[in-house]
Image 1 (cartoon, rainbow, N blue to C red):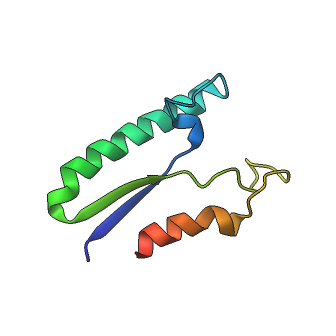
Image 2 (image 1 turned 60 degrees about the vertical axis):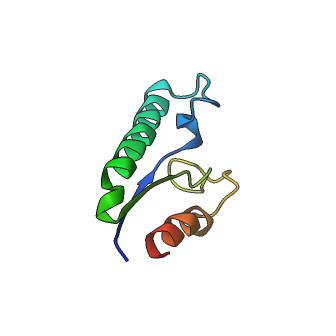
Length: 84
């Protein structure tokens, strides 16, 4: 039922919650969120859904072993958006 684009973002890119953590990373995710909104508006009439998702703090090489979420939990919403 149409194409889907899912951008993997981060809470670090939220303007409402942004602090001093990893400035380049945060700014890049803020830009990704803006691009997501632009693409969503531009592609709506072409039946292409565009979403941005924050998988949370996940136990990956970047998130580290102390992250509360498993890779499966981090992927759940991404998979749901891709297959809904």
